[in-house]
Image 1: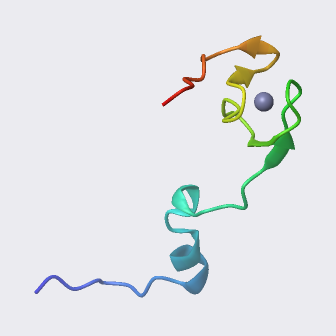
Image 2: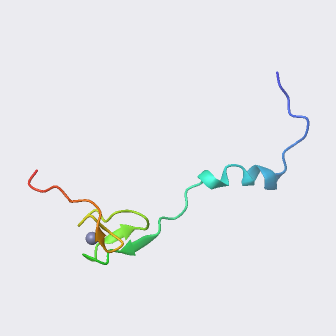
Image 3: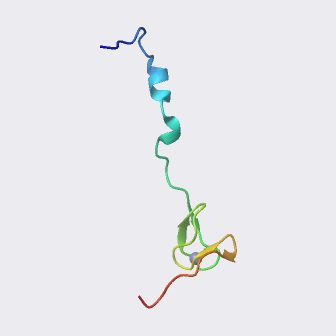
Length: 61
Ligand SMILES: [Zn+2]
């Protein structure tokens, strides 16, 4: 079986895949309708993003 030559230090172990680790979600308020929205996401209530209508929300479903 393959065997590591050197022990991985605690610091190196904890730095592994830090770019994948879940961070706290950043929540903002939609400037159009005032609903809470995640940063860098289209508003799920009205479909606006950075002051423009990014998607048209389907209704009557
Ligand atoms: Zn909105």
